[in-house]
Image 1 (cartoon, rainbow, N blue to C red):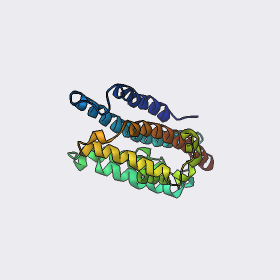
Image 2: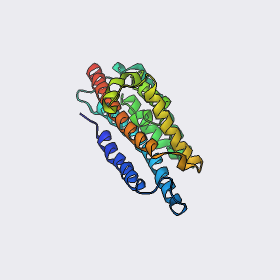
Image 3: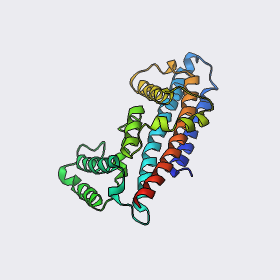
Image 4: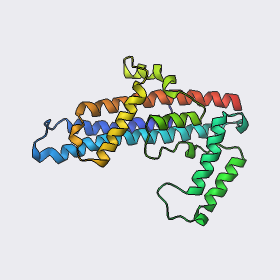
Length: 235
């Protein structure tokens, strides 16, 4: 069964596809009067494609960890993978002490309630999923690998290769999945830091959307199954 995070992602990726449908109505290359419009559309597609994937990661991991926390009978925290125990505890407490991203003005006193809450959850053997799923705005292959390693799933790209190829529709090389993700994330960075948006082709954008959709489906199936196995072992 697909996660709610994947359902949300599929709705979000449809927005990027809607922008593609608008962009292809313009000449390529665009005339001077249409240049800014086409640049805006292509840049928006590149950014939105990555944003939808990043949001999927956060929601999917949080949802998976919530399944563990809410399971009846209660899961024994000590029976979860060591990587998950460590990541949940240390990353959870660290995030509480540092404060939410983008809120540098918070004092230690302002963060005290969050620290106390995180500490109580740790003592009660709960998994702090929101901290594990942090991407820091850069959901590249290294970050994805670390997130899945934190929940006890090593070599995630190798694990999802068969499922990904089924969604993608053709065989791929051993490094295709992580390499393509890094390419798409780098493209987003290029849009954010340079003005050369028109060097990104329509084919690039369409392929990026198709790739992110296939990757999310493959990761989702893997994460749902992995979480079920964790629960069986710890309940």
